Image (cartoon, rainbow, N blue to C red):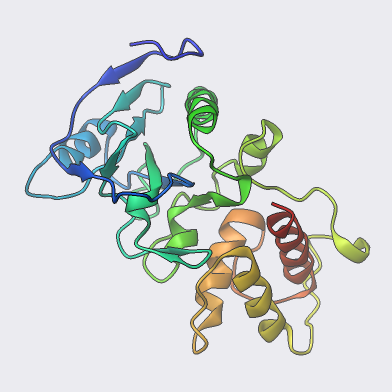
Length: 244
């Protein structure tokens, strides 16, 4: 069926869904990659009642869009998750699986047709739900200790140029994103900024959340180091997140 924007969506209902908790707003959008050999295989798993996993939508590499769970229902996509003080985000989120073999099966860039269809889909979702830009996140953002999708090749910047999510163009103090200079106390400052953005940071392993941040907002350098370029990007993202 066509949506308001003319995007054609194929209905492939999944049994893996239930009622959302009463009184909880849909205020978060979580983007995933499928991490399987094909979109067909991913959809089969997301519709397998024994797997107990699902998403609201799947976007194929050629731009085809499939709806597995209605937006008013809860899909089982985020699992153990945290963002901006909220836990177990399935009840308050919409999940989109973007077809890609992932890091385990030959991670590759996301095609332009796929990203265009994804953008159209998300813009429609944002018209229907009060999801702030700071709550458009990746699976690795909300589960950094378990997940790395959609990963460092995903075009977050391109989506932000269309009004989807956050991307800082200006960095504080004129620091370039490629500045790898060490910063005394950098990891402690990074952990503070990540918490302000929305991450759950393990005090014993803050680099885990930092790698997730870098895969999203500093994709040219995601080794988990709290260098000057990373701290500048963290400062900029935190300012945007706190502005709403």
